Amino acid sequence: MNELALIVFAPLIAGALAWLVDIKGIREIFGVLGAAVPLGYTVLLYQKTGEGLNFALNLGVFKLTFALNTLNWFFLGIGALVGFAAILALVSTGRDSYEWLFALMSLSGVIGVFLANDLMTFFIFWEIMTFASFMMVLHYNRSASLKYFLLSVFGAYAMLLALGIIYAKLGTFDFGAIQQAMYQDAYASAFGGETLISKNESALIYLLFLIAFGVKAGMFPLHVWAPDAYSETNQSYTAMFSGVLSKAGVYGFILLYVLMGTRLALEFGAFRSATKFGYIIAFLGGLTIIVGGLLAALQEDIRKLFAYSSISQLGYILVGIGVGTALSIQAAMFHVLSHALFKGLFFLIVATIVYRTGKTTFADMGGLAEKMPFTFAMAFVAILSLAGIPPLVGFASKWVLFEAVISQNLPILGGMVFFGSAIGFVYLIRFVYAVWFGQRPTDLDNTKDAPLPMAIAMAILALFNVILGIAPGLVAKELNRIFGKEIIGGDLFILDLGFGKYNALAVTIYLVVGIIIAGIIYFLGAKVKKVPVTDTYQSANPVTMEYNLTIRRNFFLPLKETLAFWLRVSFDRLYRTIGTWVEDLAEVMRTYIYNGNTQSYAWYLAILLLILALWGV
Image (cartoon, rainbow, N blue to C red):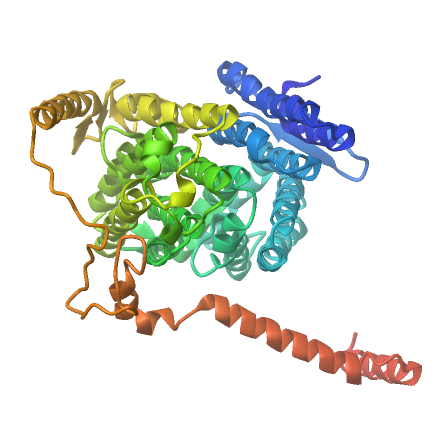
């Protein structure tokens, strides 16, 4: 059987077998094997990315076509690795065969998206991925799943309209043929020649793809589904939901550049050093960073904190893609990898905490570092990586991204990116102290550490966070291979951009030496200040029962009060209001137009025919 077919369909087949057999132990074996096959073949096929490996499945009406290249191998590798870790953790947290079926189906869906070689295959597997993830959320929370479903349908129809326009004008769904036709159209338009797709039509296609990919990537203001969907499902699965499925939207934006970037750039011109169409993506990405970061800081539930944090981090990727230089797109792809690794790890940590304690809010936690030392060690790695502290992989990707934005003299985007890093420290500080340190509630005294499958899954992602942080040249080499030239120079441990260098090995050595010195000082008897349990901060407010700020309760209440005006602006409420209007309109139409009266329908038809006749149809 073709290797690409095995990679795409093995998880789906394994999920179906797990669902049919439904015997605890056996279904888990099927599930883990189903996720291991794509990971194994992804590693084996690394050397074949330049050989034009492809696969086609003829369904009669159309073909599903898949192909492997250096670009989609990068995304495939991320999906296979994080997907395997999430499925392995599901061994501990999975409730039933239903979850195994749809978790593995969504893995097949996103892999199919990454390997698709035409827009129809891309769309079909996009919908498989969306349907399966919707079913996972539905299993836990109907309201959250409905919000996810409605926005996903909105994005899907936008994509379908874009596909329809492209096929009507070009007569093909094939990526290569579309890219060539768009390239020829771009230069025909530039020199006043005839084009297959008009300027207005190409703008409409861009807008439709912006909506479709923006929904899946959680881009502001289409992000409102993500906090509930990420928090209201199996948290082991959320590691794949946030770490992998969101990258389908990112991959879509990169495909947009590949297929019609030249056309959009020539037709719509530039803004400062970026293209206009790219700057829109970048600016929306910057807003996503700010909105996601601020809302993450205000959360009292650790699941929603990291859901909003995930939205914020995806904003960095959109900024890099939008800036549109070779360096910025490489930086975005670098952060795709680091985000998948540290955010996947974070959601596995959250899954472990919820699984062992049954708690989700800061107010119910504290002192877990003593009871869950291994999980705390994994959390320490994830915290350093997300915060962008060397030598973890999160620092390397953010450093390249910062440099890419600064080098293009885009101060507004630069400010947004730096603000995101600052707010990231803010909400991570609370997670550290409120969950792991301080007084532990008595009902958590018997808390156990992570079960073995979850511990292995966390260790896999933590290991990659460390290895690719100390040796970022491994990632840079792969990114250069994708672009066919050296954009990021250096060696295994050094990143050299030409106007700045980062030596990860030197930073690691300095860090280890610093830790040793700090340890010596501590064990020699450094004075430690004991902080009473009732120690609070009040931000100049009097201490009252209603206004008593601690690390676990109301910690960012002053920030919430400061942002009170802006918090009243809610796209979530706006979409709900629009939904209510649509329901009311539908009820009116059902009552007065679709009333079941045959005579009324005959009049409608007569009026329609009269209008068409007057128009000369």
